[in-house]
Amino acid sequence: MRILLVSEDIPYPNMGGLAKHVLNLARALVRAGHQVDLMGNTDHPIDVCGEEGEFGGNFFGELSGQHAGWKEISFGVFMPLKRTAIAKNFARLIMRRARQYDVIHYHGHIPNLAKFLPADLNFVQTRHDQGSDCFKHTRFRNGEACSTQDPSVCAQCIADHPNMIQRAVSTAAVIRYRKEVAESFHAHKTVFVSEMLRHNLTRTLGPGEWGVTVHNFVDRAKLETIRQASEPSPATGTFQVFLAAKVYPAKGVEPFLKALAPRLPAHMQVTIAGDGPDEPRLRAEFESSQIRFLGWCSPEQTLKLAASANAVVVPSVWEEPCATTVLEGLFLGKPTFALRRGGTPELARYVAEPGQLRLHEDMESLVADLIGFDPSTRYGYALEGLGCADSAAQQLLEIYQQPSRHPISSTS
Image 1 (cartoon, rainbow, N blue to C red):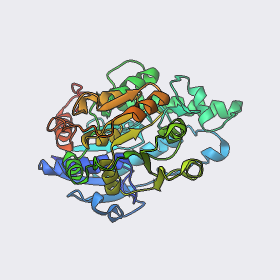
Image 2 (spheres, rainbow, N blue to C red):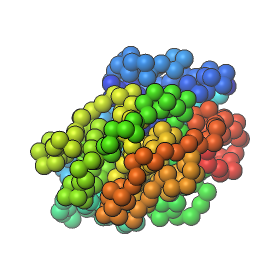
Image 3 (cartoon, helix red, strand yellow):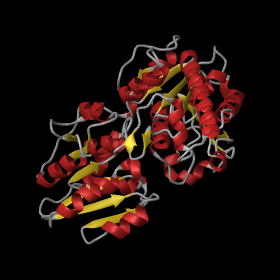
């Protein structure tokens, strides 16, 4: 097949999980014998990604306009026409090349763009976050997961104390956006990276066959190579704990450290890879000989650090749709500690052995389990093909070839 992957998250020097997912998929599709090109943003040339940006096809840096602010922060409102305009622009840019391909597969943050594409276009989009009905993409507000259906509440995410006009304008923006997203999902094929995302969407869009589920995936061959080269030494006597996360509220680094630091055993070393707005403050409060903040690390360095640890912790307090960090921890053979929320419980199917994914209802019980865990515990390898890009690519190829809007749902 001739496949055009599209994402405004590519290219950047420091790419997030969505961008890595797309490039991993591109390489898997090329390995399967397909022609794959990629449309990304105009912000950078593809070579800013280094080796991560190599996938075996052409790159078109043509997406623009997604950073337009429309003075939303200045006025304290979500502008009703902003996301419609961005979606129409993306649709126009995609259509410049769309007819040269058998399928267009979009991974990004403008889910309503499908409404503005021709009905006969073979278009698929993957939803990686909760941006199908939330302008912040996270469904996370005031330190907690947000489950409200009321669009007027969304005004508080752009203005702490919205006045009557601000609330009315923002409410209109949310209603318009959700209607366009629903029309988009009715018009074209949609993939969600977890059942949780699909289920949560029904709170605002109502019941219906909104799409199918294909979990995130990883490059298992790469992970297993790193794993074999970096196994922790059982003779060190230390318990190496590793976190990789953006250091901001939704990722839970602060509540994890607040729960652990007063009880930190003498033999435990905690390493945190990642930067973010809360990093300077948390460094000042928690950094010590036993708690290290490394700041941003390259993907390769991050995986090697995880592989050399005795345990991986993913302390997210928002509803992670399908955390790649959890998958990486599991496939590196690590006990992986996380909260029982979002799409994380769905990832239990990727464990090598029972007990490897250690889920908890709250941070206190997670920390208690971590402190009491035997750092010499080792896990084997998950079933061959499980959770890898090549298997997911085959599932997606079946979806690409389906004439119907929504094929039979399955998880990778």
